[in-house]
Length: 148
Image (cartoon, rainbow, N blue to C red; front, side, top):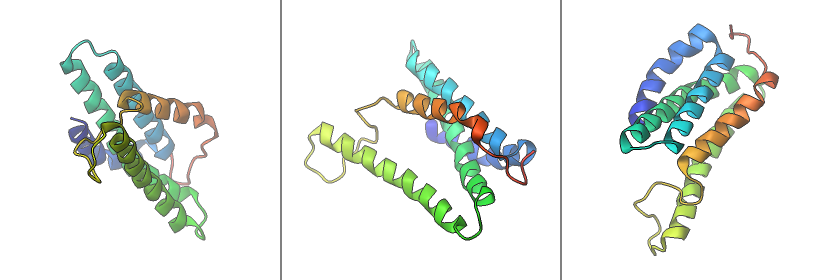
């Protein structure tokens, strides 16, 4: 369900960016992350957990469209490509590190395990911490020239 939410979020992310600006779109995605994480953490049954995963996916989709555009608009032209590339590298590196941590805790001798979740910190906690971090520092995020 998170993937379905991410597809929808990526599809509407451009419209959200154009309508409300990059900063508000980022904050909107973080609020959705937070709601989804809280819903997953407090889920009394699998159906509520699925709705939480859908919300987190929606936030991921919007953020995946917003972040590279915001970084490109807010950075100086001399280092713009490096900053956008670093963003992608950090996302991919974090996913890879998560797989390695998962591998360490599964005891499987294969290079890659079939499981895609981290066993150290539950996904809902990861999303909640990321959302709180971004929301806490939202007041220092500058507006870009195309933000509303």
